[in-house]
Image (tube, rainbow, N blue to C red):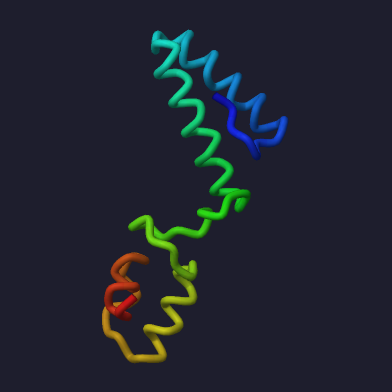
Length: 95
């Protein structure tokens, strides 16, 4: 099930994960799916895919760090910002 566009390293990783999942007792099909999802997730985290910049809701968005959101909240004078999570900061900033 290795996908087009995967590097040799990602194909090896896929094989290792798939073999590991089979040894854990998953069926061959389940192991293939788990391995593919694992490799694709890692590719996205490393910025190797078009969809690598999605926010927590799965939407394409400009990825802002918590520090950037905090600075904007401070600039706007939003109270309670120091205890807010990144999601709460985004919500309070209307993003």
